[in-house]
Picture 1: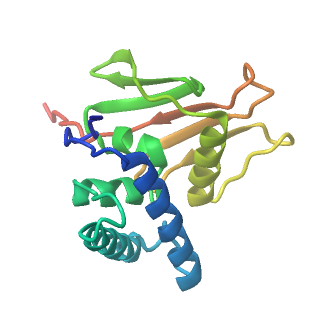
Picture 2: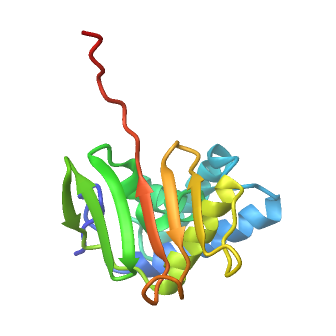
Length: 185
């Protein structure tokens, strides 16, 4: 069985269940007119309701059980209201920086040391993440403006270089600014 970011075991069929619930959640969010980035609490309630309903249906054998309900809600929140596959890295206080120069090579910096993660994205996922991040900042990127610097809602600095200007893929860098103790001496 695959492991989640939190270390809980995933049941067989997890990926398919996640995709199905993601589609259902996005449909409800659209129908209700909820802005997922402005109203994450509403999205969380909707996600919890969908996951609970799915888990109840699993008792009849109609669908596979979720296993880790909170983990599934977290994954749905990252996909719909957060920054998808990058959200666990952004939530991790030990990660200082995240960069993508190729969708299959996502790096982080922890304690000043660079690490290659096991996260592999597609170009479409990177493009969708960039679009979502820039939307949250009010900025845009296109061939007339192929570089952009922006601030994410959490205060992280985002730098993006558009595909075609960089080496075949959009280059993304997110620098997190954590709280650090300051000496007044």
